Image 1 (cartoon, one colour):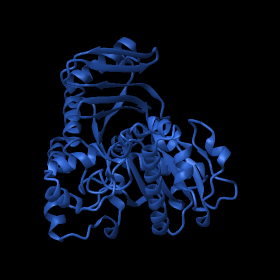
Image 2 (spheres, rainbow, N blue to C red; image 1 turned 135 degrees about the vertical axis):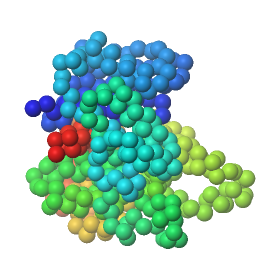
Image 3 (tube, rainbow, N blue to C red; image 1 turned 90 degrees about the vertical axis):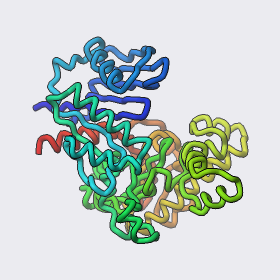
Image 4 (cartoon, rainbow, N blue to C red; image 1 turned 180 degrees about the horizontal axis):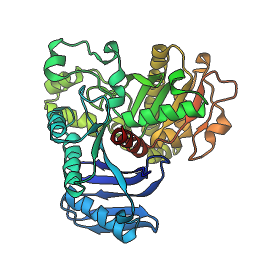
Length: 397
């Protein structure tokens, strides 16, 4: 039986793709096209022959996907020799309308278009990816998998903001949460690593990359998460502030004469680690910190302190925690972040084994002590595989 799914993640000026066996998670090929619409685009394809890299103008997302199709033919594997079951699309914002993957048709495109105000940087690009793939693969089922879907199980007390009631009905103001495909994948993998069923396990997932989010997952279902109406709320991130006093906007408008757009841009693109230390690449931040840079040290401390606060909060939400899981680039690779973020939580039964934590590995593993009541796990995320699995499940149902 054919289990291959072509996964597409269309960004505003980029397009990522993977051809994945949804059963095994093995990627037959993957690639990325960057700087779409700029004078010189960058195209990388990784297949059976290794990785190839070219630079040339790529005017549109359709040009990018056509280049990917050509790369399959030139560098393998040929799409003519592989029966593809579906095309799976990452869609950032599904609002409260989409709690599950959905087949893409004109009605869905209209509904996702209506949600553009909630994700103006992401949903338009996701829509373009759907339209392009629909034209180039007209005979394949197209499936939308939403970043927000996993968090549709949040109870009302978790997703409701204490703002005027009409704001929810009229403007959709509520917590939605993001990184859902990652949280879904990692929480399931955590249960497998513990040798238990997802329904029997409570976990706190920490997705730490350039974007960061935490999720409290009870029995395989998200019950709280740190990102809110937008991906700006919650943890400190590479360029995003995370939690701030909402009165900052009015204060800066009055005292500094900044417009709402200027404040919004600063909080999303000039804040977080970049705002504190001038550097959002965590590897470079770590080098600066080790060299004695005080701003880098403070940025690291603020970053880890915020994580620790959320761990404590979600511990109380869940009542019983079986595992804390670190994932994504920083979560998987920074032993220092894992250690600093959980420092002082021994009273909650959370103990990290320093030697195991310091080991570098691409495998899912435990880094807690044998006596720790709460397992501390490091699990590489695989959002593309999760999208492929969900897309295949829908078209086979």
